[in-house]
Amino acid sequence: DTGVSQDPRHKITKRGQNVTFRCDPISEHNRLYWYRQTLGQGPEFLTYFQNEAQLEKSRLLSDRFSAERPKGSFSTLEIQRTEQGDSAMYLCASSGQGGDTQYFGPGTRLTVL
Amino acid sequence: KNEVEQSPQNLTAQEGEFITINCSYSVGISALHWLQQHPGGGIVSLFMLSSGKKKHGRLIATINIQEKHSSLHITASHPRDSAVYICAVRGSGGSNYKLTFGKGTLLTVNP
Image: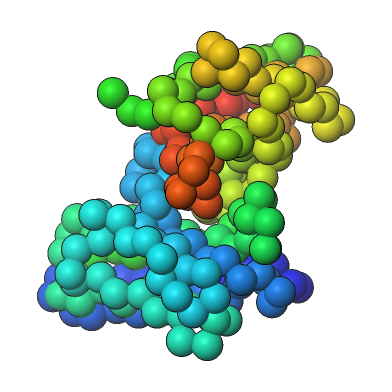
């Protein structure tokens, strides 16, 4: 399967703990996006990488959130000191050089107790 | 007011009915996407439009750039079409990589 993969698919954590999610994009895609989706809402943009450079970060991404894409391939999204409001589906997508169609991963569902 | 508005929020249809989902947006765009999301989260891209009309099987998408409006039509609907349909716009200029999403339309097609 050469689609976008995300790990883990589900994460339950206690408030205050740190969590890290991983996204593996389609191998030849140089653009990678993170989105967050809460129940009943459409996804919201969090951040965007072109190769290893993080080119934009939404104001939704507080300083507890950090994302990296160290070698321009996989990416990680870390949330420190999780809060109940962080409970959401975290979606990763990738696109090629033209950037037209974004291919989404299955998402990581985070539940903060 | 959200930059992307969809209507209706929920739609229930009988198998075989013709379905229309609407999307209006308030910002300049380089393209508009229609996406399908099944329970469990997976999102699939259905169409990308910058003008006119596209057709794929029983699905038709249209866009009117002047009116900032797009519609997604499903002909001869089937229970397997049941999903959330999301409209998303891609920004213009320096933000032409970023998608802004509507809240989605939950479609249920009953047999």
